[in-house]
Image (cartoon, rainbow, N blue to C red; front, side, top):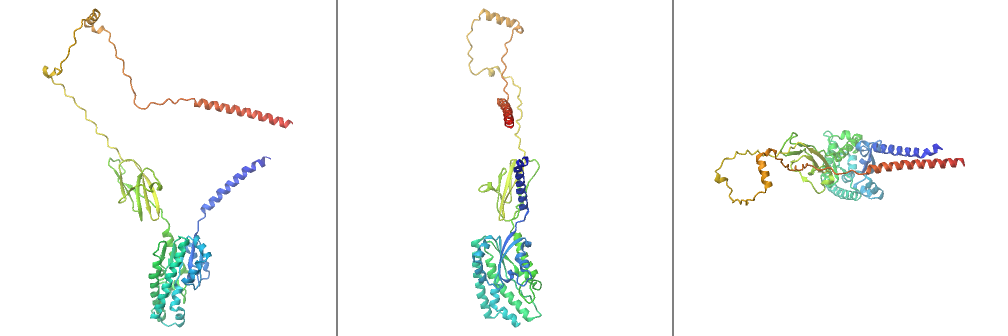
Length: 447
């Protein structure tokens, strides 16, 4: 019976422990980044043994991310645009924290007929006909890229990492064919990266990832031999570019470092200087301890990273940058008030004797008419003249002494008497209740 009564209490303890432990685990579990990668065979990981493990989308942020990969070998910018407008891809766009985009290589390879060039093994030059085809492909890529970014932006504001195209062909002075491929690659990638990719990356929220520079001079290590696709090392390089950009975009903790012009006692105002802060949009101060909300529409602007205060107290400094906002509060206690100048005592000069005529009052003195004293008054006056010491003097009443300050109010009440009386009534009532309860229990057990 006692065990049954204790079950609700045990269930409550187990429930609380479960809530606390689950919260602890959730708090310590790192939150993963949702990455959506869009592209062609390079994004797909073509040529790798384990594409879902070694392709660059899965290596970003050291693999601590959830990856959705919308890519396929051979896709051009037209085919990628058609794929991301599907309903399934739209939902993935809306869930993405970061979007990577590598597209355009197949558009250009088809324009120059790279497959036929590689098969012929003959040195190639950018003829007028090839240049026209490259121009048309570049224009189509620009249009498709604009539509792709527009569609992405209608579904998410996540940052877009837009890769430039790299030249897969290494410089080679020994082999004429390999050397011509390198020159053609340099010309085409230069046109596309400058006229299309970098222009698209100038829009807000789009970041240019320089794959071209990462691969330049390293094709032997970063490109599969006799191929155009990256090796594992090449994919690691592409992932590193994206990871560095992620780190760069992480909001940095704003640190405000104020210093005082002096920390010793002074009667002069104290100048508060603030250390250099990058990308400052607003810098203000207010007296008192404030939060960022208090600076929404008010605050004293700080110019040249310093301001002046003339009174002790707490002061709050507010800064807003492109990465966020922060406040810090300082307390100044070393300003000493200037004491009032003490008045010099006035030394009275001893009075100089003046002629009797000058001491006479300027206004006429009206003398009272002589009144004949009564015998009693005369005798009293005479007596005082005869023996003035024996005459009792009448003392004047002393002036009441008024003390400065506030008098304590008469706060004596009977509150404590009421509390004690109430406590006694509670004790007596509880005792009566217990006696009645025991009597009823005894009666019920006897019956």
